[in-house]
Length: 396
Ligand SMILES: Cc1ncc(COP(=O)(O)O)c(C=O)c1O
Image 1 (cartoon, rainbow, N blue to C red):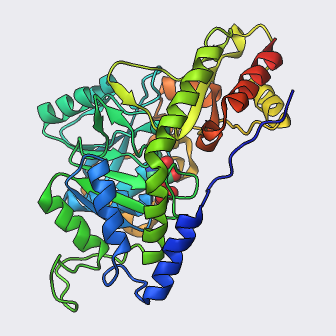
Image 2 (cartoon, helix red, strand yellow; image 1 turned 180 degrees about the vertical axis):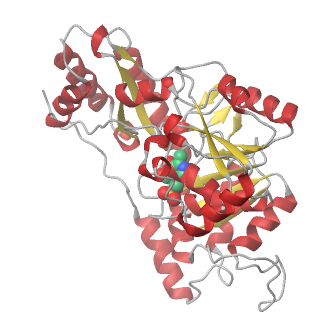
C-alpha cells in the first residue's frame, strides 16, 4: 500500500511570515497599541455569529475568565461532561465552584441532556456543554433546560471553531463561549484563546478581567476589578489572521473527507463512525473519532492492537481521553490547593466525594474511542483511501 501523506500541523504560509514581519516592523508588539489582535477579534467574532469577542492567552484562561464574568457565588455547582479536557473542570474549581459530572450521549459523545436534568440541584448555576471533538452539542435542548431552571450556559467551544448547530455557529448560542488556539487546534497561533458573547455587559467584564481590571476605554492606572493579564500579543494576533483566512475552506475539506471516510467504514463490523444527527449543519472535526467494539469485530483485535497496526502503517491515531475526568488524581484526592479547598469546604456545605462518580457511557467510550487528528482530514482522497484500506485490512 502507498504511504499516507499527513499534512504537517501547525502549517504556515507566506502570509504568516508577512504578518509576523509586519508586527516586528511596527514596533507595537502589544495588543493595546497594535491592530492585529483587534482585527482578528472582530473577524472571528463575526464568523462565530457573535457580537462581542475578547482574545486571550489560551482556552483554559478563557474559561476561567468567562466563568468569573458570570459572578457566581463560591460553592455553586457547575454541570460539565465527564468526557472532556481537564480545563473544563479546572476552570470551575479556580472560581471556588464545584464541578458536577454528567454523562455523555453515546451517539454524539457530547454531554447528555437527560443527565444534565438529573444532575440539577438547587445549587446548580451553570451548564458547560463541550462541543467535543468539534461536534456541536444539542443546543436547543440545553438552552431549554437552562431557561427552565434559570441557569447560565457557557459553551466550551475550544475544539469547535466553525461548528454549527442548525446553521448557527457555536459559541454565542449560550451566554458565553470559549475557544482555544493551542497548537493542535483547527486554527492556531501555538497558544491562544477567545471568549465570545452577545451580551455587552459580559463582554466588558471579560475584557476587564483579561486586562488586569482596566475598564474598556478606562484610564491606564485605574483598575476597577480583580483581573489578570491574559492579553494576546500582536505576533499571535497576526498569525491568527493568517490562519483565519484558511479556516472556512479547511473546515469544508475536513467535513468532506470525514464523510467520505465514514461512508466507507460504516459497514465494517465493530466500527461506528462519527454520528450525523439532525441539527448539526457543520462539525469542525477537531478529531475524527470512531468507536471500535472488539466483541462485534470478526478480527479479535483489541483497540490497542488496532491503533498499533494503524500507527505502524503511518496513520496517526490514539485513544482520545483514556479515563473519565473524575478518575483523575485531582478529583480522587481532591487536590484542589489550599485556597480553593478552603473556599469549597466553607461555601459548599456538603462533603465532596468524586470516588463514587459513575458515568457509564463515558467509561465505555474511554475504552472504545479511536481518534485521528484533524490535519489528517486535510489530505487527499488517496490519503483517505489509505486510512480506509488500513482499517479494513487490519480487521479482515
Ligand atoms: C475541550 C477543551 N477545553 C479547554 C481546552 C483548553 O485550551 P488551552 O489548551 O488553549 O488552554 C482545550 C484544549 O485542549 C479543550 O480541548
